[in-house]
Length: 205
Image: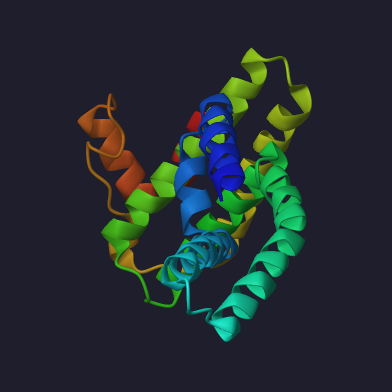
């Protein structure tokens, strides 16, 4: 457990600082990461509890065997989980996750499962994070990741185009908070032409 926490405590913030702060939230919301952290934490707590209840004249053999099996299984899954964490931190995978999350939000809006204001905020945030990954990649002269980020924005614009006819009317209404710095005339033009998503994606470029 100490090894796992130390690895996560160092690797996740450092990688998030290199690519996007969104990585920390993505890591904590991942179901496999949640399951592994709960599993190993429970295993460590169970070993401590069994050690506590063992006395001079009392040895809970079933609890002792369970703890041994639990610890062996924990060690067995630890190495593949480390590989999973390393792959999770790959910037290409970060971009893929941001893209899939954005597509899922757009799908929910198209079928009426997500409130348009909340969905707009979530989409704005993810487009910004993709743009952040591209910018930080350029700072490190990492052309491959920068090109992947640009291609991700292109794919999202294409995907959004296929869903656009099914989007509800309130989805296309934006205000000054969504585009800081634009004039009232520019905001009105975006509302009339219903192109705020395309504008937001292209602004990242």
